[in-house]
Image (spheres, one colour):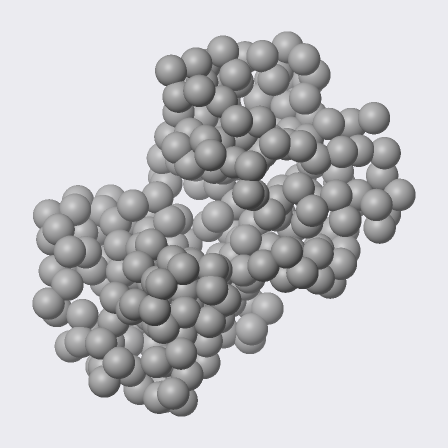
Length: 266
């Protein structure tokens, strides 16, 4: 039996195990997907141990996405983003990928949203924001990075071609001309808050929220009320898992089955 898993801390409430297990079962693949909660001061031991034990693949979640970079051969996109969320243990050693970025682009493609030539606003400057900013730029968008600590927005923007950094006070003006507005902060996570002013939304844009608990955040509800198209955070989670599954197995992922398993646990 092949063994895959997710490593993080905390990790017990991860939705990756039911999503991936449903895919393995649907395709008749003899594999299991488990959780590994590692101590932060022993993460090197955890990664080396997974390789030594013959684990076939890992997804990596907080707080270890940057630590993982040190233990893998990074792909080009990983070198740009500086974080790893998926590891494939190959015969030549562990290879690191960032399917947060590719998964987000797949989510937009699934909703028939073309990003080339658009103006995208990314709120946040952490790991999710990095994946979104680099992903949007790679897809052909001009990116405005907005953050409460403006210096962090400028730091990220300096790394991303065709990107600019801004303070949170500039968000309403940026939203007025935006084709895409993405929340990459934790604001709205299991709370009725939004990082964006409700009256700044307009109907000619797409709203994406990386938060998926709840599925309809205040950010998305305000956008929908203004007539904007919305994409919830579970789509990003789904398609990063789809990319990882296909990388590990070489099989086409049963997307509908994975989506049903994911949403049934939300």
